[in-house]
Length: 268
Image (tube, rainbow, N blue to C red; front, side, top):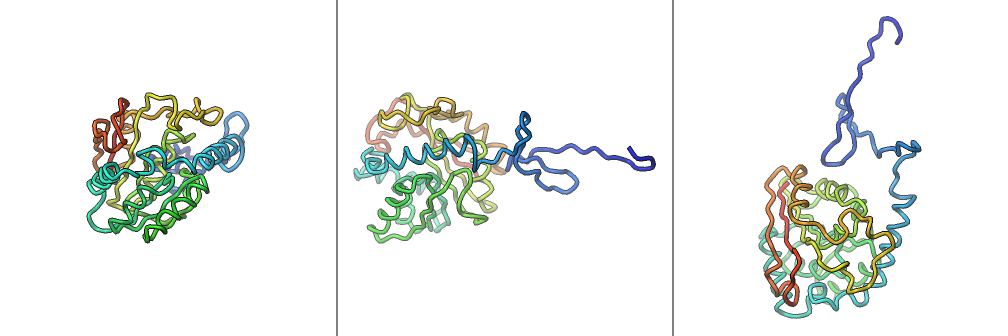
């Protein structure tokens, strides 16, 4: 230390909304963490995470053509469609809102939202899913914007929404807690996060098709229980967090289910 100078050591604290450490003197984020073994930046656009992302996109692209064959995916049966419409109305504002549907798949929930007057933006990693979502809303004469992109690096820039909705996606993500932070950051003050999730008894949610190599290392492979998800969301939400069980409502799924299924609603 140079004589006559004082070196002030400050502690960087993690921002619970972003996961990045911030300098308490300036509030500035320190950016992506470096790998302590190599010193390299943990850039999600390259390396193993990018490779896995490509595999996951290819998997769901291949599944797009048959995706709506599942009762709770395509919502082809009138009772199933009506059950989801009722639930969505209970979770979303009565007035038209800007809704981000993350992991929108073929756009079945997006269509219900658009029919209720909401302004929908859907995002999915698989381009073929996005194509089908666009076609589904166009065929119904409804407006919607659909973008191919990563749920953890949303292609919507700094745009903010009144509601972020996500159904059955978190189990597929390499870093679901980072995704939750990203989604909360895309909400306007007073916005709402709606997560429809579960803990699956079956090995995967793909109709018996084996999922991508290394899926067993995903943090929430097989789904996430309501208690664990609530614990992850609660520090991010300035408002209340509530959980609504959905497993007993057979119409939502096209028949009885035995595994844990629920919706988590958080006001931010």
